[in-house]
Image (cartoon, rainbow, N blue to C red):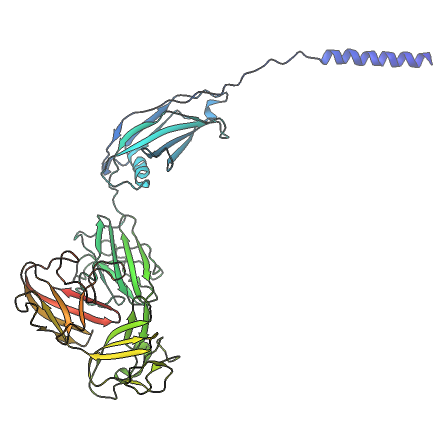
Length: 478
């Protein structure tokens, strides 16, 4: 028994000795640096590069080390830019690791400036600063702010803009179909700037169009590469320097008023519907009782009130109906044919009094319709009229247009009117987004009034009135 206890004592002593050999003293206390704010400097205080400087180094930013307690190569830096005075609320940034400077080419800096929406060749104050941190974004330190003067340069556009500084719309989707020259200003774009054109146009559903840099000239055009480009817009190009662009733009599926934005800088179009546009179809004996190919009445506000012009040739029964779609699923008739009452699915047809060019109205809320025979004239301040004499116009049955000639002096104005009185008259609708420049409205502004449209140059002019698109009417002065 004594031997066993002795052995246990020896073992315990040995363990104590070993334990005492492993013991170490207290570890030294280390203080990790929190760093110091970097100080930013720039090689220049202003930049005004030209397009030819695109690939040249234009500016160098340098900053002092924040002296973090970590390898300098792992420190994260964010170079920040913003329009002066916004406190970097809409900043654009460049992120670097371990660097104490960064040099930008003119192109890189220009892209930053254009990203703010800055105009070309205009000088802006731009704030720049550097933010440092550990790689995990901890302990951020912010530098001083430099305010530099920077001027973005014009970037060559992706698609060559028209040298004419004009742009026109032509095609089966337009009010005047493929006739060229096109009516102006109703089918002419407004030049917003050197690379942007915009216009609001009446477009016929399911058709197509092209853009022309010169009115009346088919030699060059803006088009798309293939029919897959959607009607809402997409890439386009110039046929004059790239034969791949030889396909018509797809028009929208539904007839109505659309805004077309043409961006030559990025080579893109954008097509936006302005509002809902209602249509009724007018099949009758005069056109073979075919709703799909019948003339239409239009309601630009889609409020149940429709209007349109229909040419009815001599012969036949002069009977017709009105359908809400280009088919016979539903139709409107008249209880007696001529009572002026519009009735859905009525057995009796509606009837014109005889041959002629008629303004037809239909109201699907009040259930009233009218057919008024019209002959159109020009009246205005020009010498041959003096707002008293009507100048006759000639009818063109191929597109429901009327044409007349007037000679104007500087400041002259005119309007269109039917049947020699003011009951039905058309004037310029103005530049409202709902109608588009160069379109007409009942009782509208005098054409040639510079306060609402434009001045007519002095001289002899051929004036055309287009009435072939229900609810949307336009004109051309040549």
